[in-house]
Length: 237
Image (cartoon, rainbow, N blue to C red; front, side, top):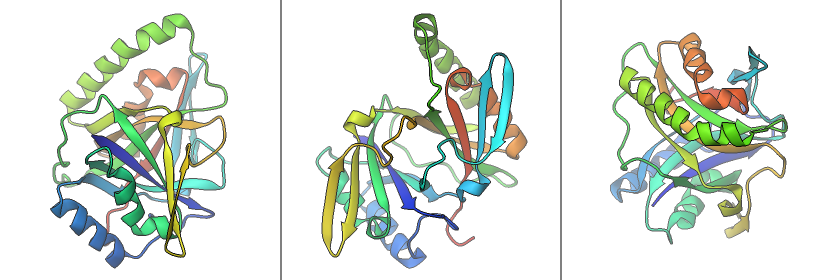
């Protein structure tokens, strides 16, 4: 089963997942050798985030993350493992010692596969599908959202700008994992207790931010949700 590990830092994020690169490389080496880690990356800080939404026919583009909270996403991993092992892999991750890891099952995820090598001159982004405080969806919108999203996925896959993506199971199935003084603490629920939540994500590879915004603006959820674009921050940069 596939899961998303959402790495969260409580406080100002200056650089990616809040742990040392040797520790992170060690975890990645173990997870890749075990066939568990499919892909992931630290993310550039929230100051580099861009949010995209459409309201009453107007496209609204703002700087910053979709949720103005103290806790912010610092990185992610997508893992594929037995459904009894996801919390163990989260607890092993070095970011669990200094932050929090939210573990969310993927819903209807594609066949597990690592991402292809990055293409020259392209930038990768995670597009978080956020549901904000103003989220509203009528019955007609709900019925149309699935087919419309499938059409967007097919178009963006065909254009080569979407590399992976999935809906996430609801926050009622989320678990948060942290390690403090060699104790593993697991609690039910998402990393933030607010109306905002991450409902899904897509990994994009675009020429620049303008193209990423154009791709996000075509997503059906832009009309009722809040889409956050965060550039990946590969190790070693």
